[in-house]
Length: 269
Image (tube, rainbow, N blue to C red):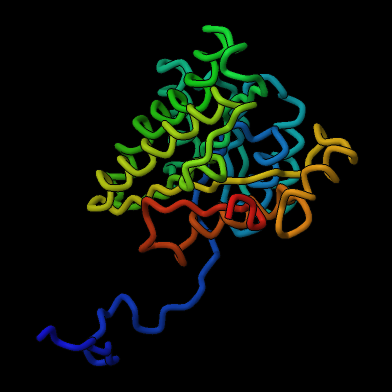
């Protein structure tokens, strides 16, 4: 006969669980956000700053937007840094992480938002487009994580959150965004491989996987068409995606790693 379930009484619980509260505050933490000038990246940057984090704003081309975000973070009383880099380059990625640690003295949170999107069937996708999807969505995250982990391991604390794609865990195929989906599937594997590797070093690695997100590139007609396919009846806002990122970066998620949070309103269920 198998023993029955044992209940966890306060006297037998780990001291780490006693008095645990939902702590989403990031005071004193330093976060690097890549792809920070995009719709989701901007929302993530501001949400982290509002939660108390100092922010390093990673960008490739849109310097003005990066500077605007930095000014907004400074008005909140946070430290802010803009850093330009091609994160598919190992040399530039190493320099990026080094600059953040030099200016702030540490890097606690890495958010990999950067990653190009391609809406095109696989049969029409060129080899160059295929390579671009892999490099911007997967190689960039690999290089950034590898560069950031030495400091995180040394401090025995780190939070890495990668931006993925809803529906991958359910095994969905994506006829119109095949190359993008393949890249995000590889990113999911990277996320979980790193999560298992780093769990003993005080570093968590997770993924936030948005579904359809309303943004400047989505027309009202497209939004209505897409909303009809979502049980919640609407698209996600970038702020809702950012909220999931902040949770996984926060002390409240200290025992969560290798997990995917889908922000998709029930799409794909």
